[in-house]
Length: 354
View 1 (cartoon, rainbow, N blue to C red):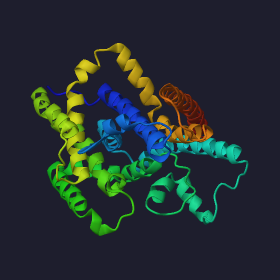
View 2 (spheres, rainbow, N blue to C red; view 1 turned 90 degrees about the vertical axis):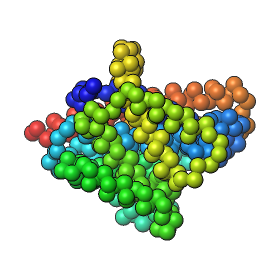
View 3 (cartoon, one colour; view 1 turned 180 degrees about the vertical axis):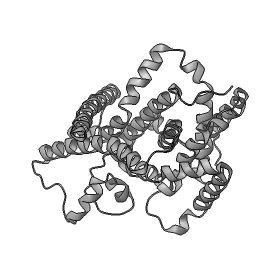
View 4 (spheres, helix red, strand yellow; view 1 turned 30 degrees about the vertical axis):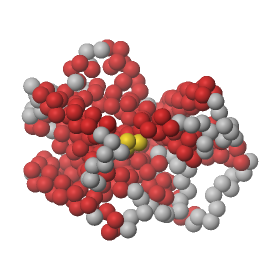
């Protein structure tokens, strides 16, 4: 049965929440256990980093794929300037607010405004454009504070090419699929030859395929061909990649994308079940509203709290309380960021109408 692509798809909101939680726990594990051994989180490490599946990579890939899908859900081509203005303002305003927030925290913490050194001033343009951390991951020294990490710059580059990618898909979806798939396989099987500094799963040239697949999978012609019986394939695929202990000899990004498609189809086919719970719909819509803001602020909350604790060893109960506190603070700061962003949008709209 063909589902309307005009209504809200709540399974995407739920996938975003799950992805946010995975990313949050992954960064908790990295800072509390790997970087600063404050508590033994080996169990969490084992749950997140599997031989053939990195849940952190899965979570980020889902964000990218759903971003492509939700843009394509509108089902229309927009004038380029209008599209870029709306997309970039929606992303950059919360980014600026989160950046200023963390900059002030750093200044108070270190009692100096000179928290950067030896970086050419003109490179602040990378921060203005929201790509400073993405370029930092590529080995370029910038004024990055880690806000949005590599993901923010990557998704902004995806937005840049979206109008052209969507137009190509509408004009000839089969040729676009063939070209994009050849590109994806080529770059992943030859990634080491390009001398990239950035890991492949963070690279726009790899992630763009997941973004494109979101556009393809949400297409009404594609959706009409997705059937419930596919769940007998997609669910075992997900379980196999997660639980299989042997190493599957495929590029990591290819394994990730296979799982991403399986998760996307599985949740989409469960949309009717998910949307039947009113409380779940309300919950997912609320958190979807602040999903970007959570992504922007969560990492510096983790960094700052752990720093203020002096990276000292913690017991099990103390660690649990720290994790809960960091989660609550992340949500609070995300709500504040979203409220301030909304005020900024309103002021900009009011100014434009004059």
